Image 1 (spheres, rainbow, N blue to C red):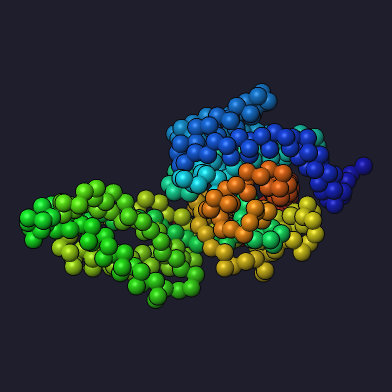
Image 2 (image 1 turned 45 degrees about the vertical axis):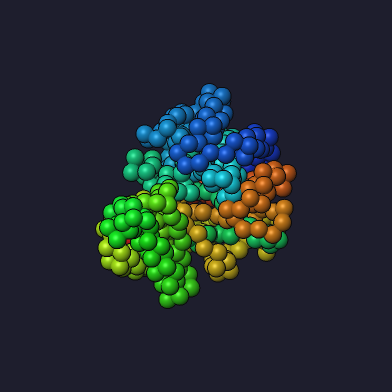
Length: 412
């Protein structure tokens, strides 16, 4: 007897529930151990070893440590013909805060989606290949950008992940997330040292140039668009008071809806820094550390994920679709760069927090470590991503539509 598409999906939904429950303790262990051992960008050795060792223990996956030339990236592959879907396990924590962006939950959720989808394909004897990528340095150095250049996503047909957020009491899942394009750049001012008391007129003050650039950018903020952001910090400044500073750096990160808008904003920031250099008679050098692109939103993939998420959410009102997502919550991510190469989806879901707080805060980090409350919503989105990825693997019509809609939107 041939089962209908609806009957197959019903059995797959039940199987996803079953296998998620079967391995829940493992996923909680990953999230908990990463929470207790936070590591900053490209230093995620513990997380790398923890997850690689876990999947090696099954003896059935192709596990590559230090993948694509990066010592804290890893790849886990289930090779079974057909199309290839990808799940992204972000690994890095925030300096001085820990997992204030919940990457311990992202990693655990992607591990769950990967393993559960593999078990479903095996249970129903279906073709399809699945990749789990350990992606370092999302917060500050663009790990996925480097992995893209290394070919990690070369054969991927669709990419998935889910990110915890704080909504201060609102229980919801956003399908999809909204991201801004962003650039992170260093501006180095060079002056001339001199004794600050005896011969200050012989010096050229690089720190003054940094301060002037900061003031200029602060004034600029009044004239930027509501969705645009500029933030920064002083880096590598002087350490003594009695020498006119010869060198000082300031870092600015700016964001806007598209790369074109972001580059326009970047030129205005550059003008602020050039003006500071001119006023202080310093020289200026700038360099871009990373650039995250705006995210391509693929309508058919969004719709598939929206329907998948409703299957596992507490109720339909918990799931916010594209027409009702919270567009005033802005961030940026290197998943945007991935989306310019392959169709990608990034869910955002709320976790209960110990008190009202923002992401990238100590309270949010502590909340990401409360596994009894943080893991249930994490596993809901893991199940949703597993089901959505299953659809991409098995539904030829959906796959063709996703590919066509993505292709016409690629900008860069």
